[in-house]
Length: 555
Image (cartoon, rainbow, N blue to C red):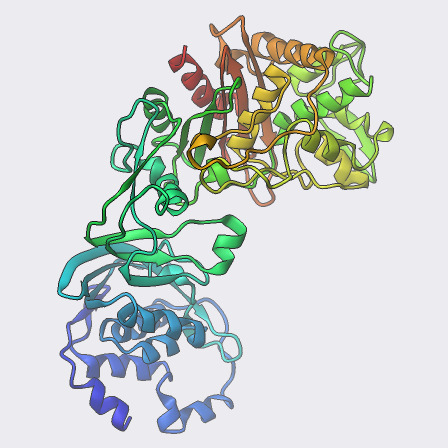
């Protein structure tokens, strides 16, 4: 391949092993594997010939997966970013990140060790050395790649996504080694003890967020680090903070105190540990202080930033609307038929149950969908949105808790989608932080924006609701929530926690998911919590025990 090959062959090579076979003893071997795919064909004309060959279709063979993975990994290991990028289905995007892997991240001595392929997916481990201005430290992690057929010719190529290079990378992110843009912080719990990800694994993203928000104003000094610098999309949409991967030299941390309660945080970590996709948040209803936050997955912070349909826990907000409009009272008769049709959709209850001659309180406690859908004909399209924003502070995108959050979404909808939003489906989106705030507002009658760092630290303005609910509405909400905790779908999880308690369960259907997401939100005294277990089934059985455990721990 002319000059490019001669330069490449000057580098020493390490063997790359896939499936127990030595795929390349040096770059010449890597090039050979690469040429088998036609990726180096530009020099000998075979690329042009490929246009006349039939497009390859059908499932990938084990040989095709092995060859494509070998070409990519061998080239990357030997520092040939262009050749590695050409082995993907998006060479332009791949080349930019792979070039930056050595140039910007200053990673050398890269060793890639593939694991056993599972179909078209190949896991592999990465070992490298971060070297910068006479400082060096090792880096090790695991990730994976997937081989696909390239559009146009069907040739096997590695599907390009930033997570191939590092599992925490998303579109637009970069790996950079140098002086950190933000000084480190030493985060403390409410008692003054240091919070670390080693002690509380769920707090990794929270600590990153605290650093980004308070690092400069807390009086620290930046150190030298390998970091993931987030792209504009991550900072704008999900507000994901930068992440430190390796610290070459320690900076001087500033100090920031949080509202987290160490006992409740430990209990929250314990409750989500070992569960699949579980998240929980605990808050103090009278103030909005966040006392605990935990996720079973330690990457994206679903508890604060998730955007999920909340299912029947949203009926707390809908009940507020119905009470205000005089469309329901706890002990008044209220329809709960098997089916209700609205906007061309036919809605039903779980297992198609019905309550004959029942009250609204009975329908709320049993989580009757049709009891709420039946009221859609009496509501305006924006009624639910207005109550959610004006009383519960949801969907205005102005919460300032101290780290990034998603503040809920209750869009104005019409026809069937408006009806579905009444039961927490349609376009309604929430996370455990939002729903812990909702049940807190229902308990006190007043919205207190949740916060992790006291507003007095940085003199920021917290969100305020436009109005409080009436005393009558608050009393009615407390009555139906208490009844649900004592004798409804939440009674099993809440057993023994009364009498100053209330709860609501929820199940939210998700397309393509066999089991619905299970939700649970509740209060006991001056402690409230909400949790979700994705694909967990009924909220009382999945998220209920997690939330109840926190309420018991805070007693």
